[in-house]
Image (cartoon, rainbow over all chains, first blue to last red; front, side, top):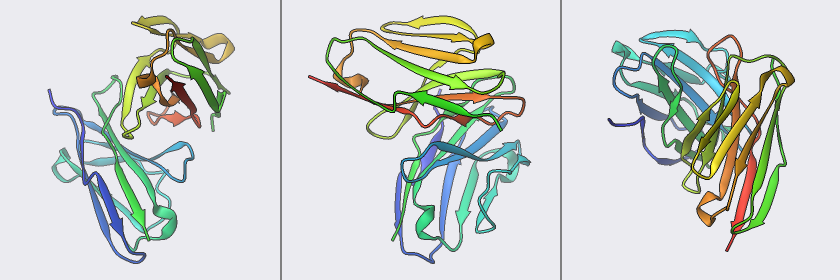
Length: 112
Length: 108
């Protein structure tokens, strides 16, 4: 069974540009989460989807971040426009209801 | 919200040594997980352990929920054990709240 996959693995962009990160959860996992780790700090929750619905988006830092999960399968996280402080590693995780979260390999975002 | 504190922040050991990593949390939790972030940045599930003790090879973990802490033991450390170890808890809502991690360096 394939694990959680994320694309790209690394993205380097200029301040003010737009970047879209993609997450493909484990097949059959209705729950999908986004987290990020910035500047060597702790990993922090961004938002949680159940199928295509946003269950909790309390961790989204501001309106420059937009997450979607059309059709309840893969999810995208768009940052527009990117700022220097957005640099970090963005993780996606998925799980079945009542199960354990499994994490993807992360996308390392560098904003110059 | 719930606070999660890990100690020590950094740990440097020689290959073959044993280590104990600690995770304290400020309130009762539904779930506790330990992760290893390897040098490539991947987060690897180690244990799901809201209470009790589990063992997997050279690694074991114990959570004492009533006293709000969990311990991760690594025996006979190998250089491949190096990386950052995270503890994360779930309280009520389904999101994980992470500690700041313990950076473990195993020297040959």
